[in-house]
Amino acid sequence: MNMHGIIEPVELGRPTRPSAFRRASDWLRRNRMLFLVVVVPTLLVAGYLYLFASDQYESEAHFLVHGAESTPQPGIGVSQVISMATGISAGQNEAMSVADYLTSHNAVDRLRREDALVQRFQRQGVDLLSRLWGNDPTPERLLSYYRRQVKVEYNTETGITVLRVHGFTPRDSYDLARKLLAMGEQRINQLNARSYKDAVALGQSQLAAAERDLAANQASMTRFRQSRADIDPQASGQAQIGLVTDLTGQLAAVRAQLNAMRGLISSNSPQVRALQSRVRSLSAELAAQSGRLTGSDNTIAGDMAGYEGLKLRQQFLAKRYDAAASALQQARERAMRQQLYVVRVVDANMPVKSLYPQRFRVLATVLVSLLLIYSIGWLIAAGVREHAA
Image (cartoon, rainbow, N blue to C red):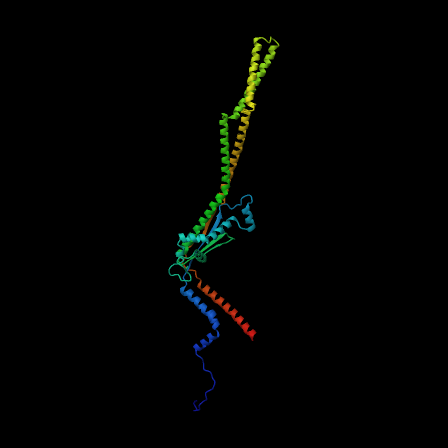
């Protein structure tokens, strides 16, 4: 009814304005797949991250495996050939082996025994999704969880290894990082000891063989002297040669004197007979001494030959021993120059603020990923409907 008393008719068919709840219900019904695929999972992840997820602290350390000698050695060996073919030096091999060791089951087993590794990952108050499950986890499960918490990355360009350790308390991450650094240094020391042992093993075996042969030859010379009852057969032989030479000279002089006297006096004179007797005695003595020198059995010549053979072998073995000793010393010096050391470029830090989990980044990643999944599904469904129409 208006001001003139005329009743205006009500327009038939005019819709009433729906309530906010009805509009929200209609939107959810129309976009229920978006709500189920994107909104609900995102809200669940956000609730977990901001309400339940435990803070994790990161301790980071940098170290470098450095050799005592950086200049290359003369000559090309197998390791140098491999290095030229692969572009990886011996120091890089050792550094990568240390990085591999720190994430191996050997390191985990040692940390479990010596550093209460399981208890560190099962602190009271840690949420169920972040903590290590099980009162007595299997080595495989512990290793898998450990590799999520500990990252060791080797940079081939700089040669620096970066160690990152995540823990549920600042002290846990700091202590574990320092323990891993100490284990890396011990590993390098073990590799150094093994390398040194392998490098000098051949030299030591050669020196020991030369020493044994030299001692055996010396024992043979001693037995030879004892069997001949002569401390120096070589000197005895030289003395015998001198004696034979002297007897030969005396015999020649007496014979010359005898021949001279025969032309002057009768051969029956006492002087001639005395010289003749002297010639006979000198000849007999010369024959006896010459027999000792060059006879067939147990002669000085035979003794000298055997003794000189032993003496020559002794000189050869002495030179061999000196060469083996020098080679061993050089091998030791070379092995010492090739020793490796762990240089702590950046020591482990005591964290103050938790950096993980990265809540906003994780939530944004989940949201974008779910939106992509929803968009792909919507496009596929639209294409199916269009094809069916």
